[in-house]
Structures are given as C-alpha cells and as structure tokens.
Image 1 (cartoon, each protein chain N blue to C red):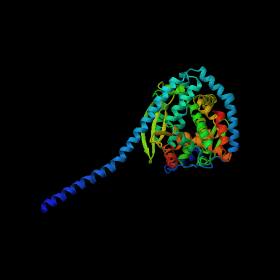
Image 2: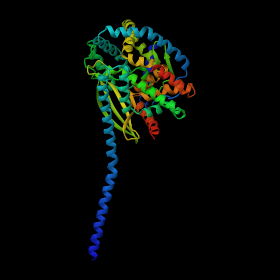
Image 3: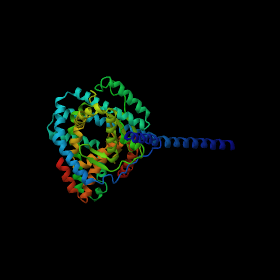
Image 4: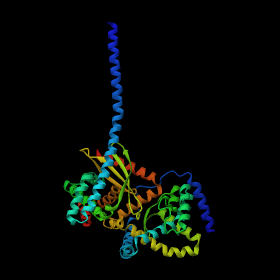
Amino acid sequence: MKKRYFLLFVIMSTLLTSCSNKIVYEEKKTDPFERFNRNVFAFNQYLDKNIVKPISTSYADTVPINARKSIRNHLSWMNLPTTIVNSTLQMELENTILASTKFMLNGLTLGFYDLDEGETKVQQKDFGSTLASINIPEGPFLMVPFFGPKFTRDLTGVLIDRQNVSNASPDIIDEINLVEIPINIIDKREKLSKSIDNIYESPDPYIKMKSYYIQNRRNKVYGDKYLNTKNDELDAEFEKLLQ
Amino acid sequence: MQNLKNFYNNKNKVKIYLLSVLSILIMVFNPLNSNADNLVKGNSLIIEMISKAQTHAIKTIKLQPEERSSKIQNLIKQYINLDFMAKATTGSFWKKASDVHKEKYKDALLKQIVNTIEEHLNTLANLTYKHRNSELRGKKLVYVRGMIEDPKKNQPPVNLLWKLAANSKGKFMVLDLEIEGISLISSNKAETMSILRKNRGNFEVLLKKLNKNN
C-alpha cells in the first residue's frame, strides 16, 4: 500500500516537472524558528567539537591521502542511485545517462577507484531538488540535530531518499548504512575542516553557517537561474554603492 | 565660374560626409574598445594578484607572524577595495557610523581577510589557477571567472568568480569573490547586519566581536 502511494507520487511529480520554470524561494522570513535553531546549532557544535572533529582529525592523520580519496570515491558512488532516480524524475536525461554510466563503470571497483578520473561531470540530485523542480517552496530554515542545516523541503527529501535506498534492498543496505553514515560524516568533516573552523571563529557562527548553506543549496538546486538572479540583485546594489 | 563653385561645394559635401562617417565609427567602436580594455584590465589584475599571492605565500611561510601579516596586508590593500567591502557589508548602518568606527571596522575586516589567507598559505602555494572567461556587467562591473585546481588531483577543482570595478583613480580592484557560488560579501553582510540589528546599530559591539576572533 505504502509503495503504491509512493509510485503515485512519483508519477505526479514526473508529470508536473514539465511545467516547472520558476525559482521558488523567499529571500526574507526564512528563519522563523531562529531561537530553537540557535540552540540546536550550539548542541551540534558541541558534538562536533568533542566527538566528530577529534575523530576526523585522527582519521586525516592516520589514513593515507590515497586511501581517503578511495573512500570518498566509494561514498559518492554509493550516492549515484539517488542521483539516477531523481534526475529521471526531473526529466534530466543527460544527467541520468551520465550517472548510470558512471555507476556501472565504477561498479567494477565498487566505486573505490574513479575509472574515468573525474571526466564525467555528474550533477548530484536528491529528492529535495526534485520537489524544487515541481515548484514546492523550500520552507522554513531548520537546524536539525546531527544533520545540520536544512530547509524543511530538503529534510523531507533526505528522509525519502533514505527510505528509497532501504526499500531497494532492505537487508544489506541497512547494514551498509550503519557503517556508511558515520564514515560519510567523518569524511565530510575532514573535507570541510578549514571551512567549518572558519565558521566557528566568525562573530556569529550560526548566521555564517546559515548563509553558506542557503547560498550553496540554492546554487545546487536552481543552478544558473539562481546565480543569475542573485548576481543581478548584487550588481544593482554594487553599482549604487560605487556611485 | 559656376562649375568651379559647384565643384568646390561638392568637395565640401564629400568632406563633411567622410567626417560624419568617421565620427560615427569612432562613436560606435570607442566604447567597445574601452569595454574590451576593461576586460583585459580585469583579467590581468586577477592573474597578477594570484601570481603575487603565490610568490608571497612561498616567501612568507617562513617569516615571523607579524612580518608575514604586514606583508599580506600590503598585498591585500593593493588589490582589494576595502572601502567598498566595508560599505557593502554594513548596508544602511554605514552612513550612521562615526569616522572612527568606520576606520576601525575597515581594520577589522582587513585582519579577518589576512587571517583567512594565513590559514590557507600552504594550499595557496601549491594550487594552479586557470582563467575561464570574463564578462562586462552593467556600466562599471567586470566579472572574471576562473578555477583553482590541485595539480595532484586530490581535491576537486573549485570555481571562482571575481567581481571587479575601477576605483576613483581608475585602478581596477576586487569588490567581491564568489567561491562555488558563495559570495563573501553576502555572507559577511548577513552576519554583520544581524549583529548590528540586534544591537541597534552599535558598532562597538560589532567591533568587539570581530576583534575577539581576530
């Protein structure tokens, strides 16, 4: 029954995709839960400083760079099925083909070695971006315990993507997820180490984290459409200041 | 006599015609030339800045912290329009700030940039920069797009967008930098405005917070 509803939703999404052209985001009032979010941010920061950062630092110190690169390749390979499904839903056939080819090709090494050496540029797609493509607004900004910053729409997307992966192969994938998620967190922390430390050192780390997340997420979801709109606004502001 | 007069008049007409064509051509092509000139200036400034920053990174890594900071500060002042950055990041609060606060804020901003560069000196010394394209935006702005790559390919390439404009002396300077679509001015502005709004535009509080981390 659950699967039927999901299938229906997928079909509806696909049909609606064809009429999507707008960028649906609100520049103001994105953070109605600021006080709550700041508390969660403080909690996440505490966890990060005391648990995640020490582990990721020792991971970077002990694991050689080539091994870390292989693990990173494997993690991004594991994410390709999500990209394939969501690119298809968004009718981005070129990305679907590229992601499928990359998934099959690198499947020969279980994704640990990138056989095309980064030549194929696959755009990562998730269910959040699929929802955005059918003009579902991003919703309020949330700081989620353990997960970090997310728009409500993207949090729903993450949960549905996870559900899809575990539906695909319930037994093995669940076991892999138990190992994969912590490694993913440690790998990402190591990769973004300088940027995160830079955020913590800023006068208002919460606002800085929020601003980086919003710009990065909108850039990923809306691509050039967002960048052009943002740059047009900034240009007008800059020209005024230069007068 | 009449024929001679006609010939003289026709000759003048030809001259006037040629002059007007020439002036129209100058009017049409001169802005294009100056636009192309601006693009070239913008490009060469970024390439010069990056090569100088890399040379500085290699040379200054071994220096004492204070000497290193002052050298980086001089480099930043040559290429980055701090006056503009200070105005752009404080929005409407800039006009209300006193001259002392304005100067102090600019110093704090400079220190912040120096600290960020110092943290990335090792990376800066090893990366390679590739120019992608340049674009004229509006009447004053020039966009220069490029990419930094790790020669060992351990890190993915990073897309950069520099926004430049000529200052009052006609020298092109950097106004903003976008790293993978994240604008430094936008994120700094969000932070600064949030602090100023909460403290009713009190620059002392903002400066205290900035200097605490510098």
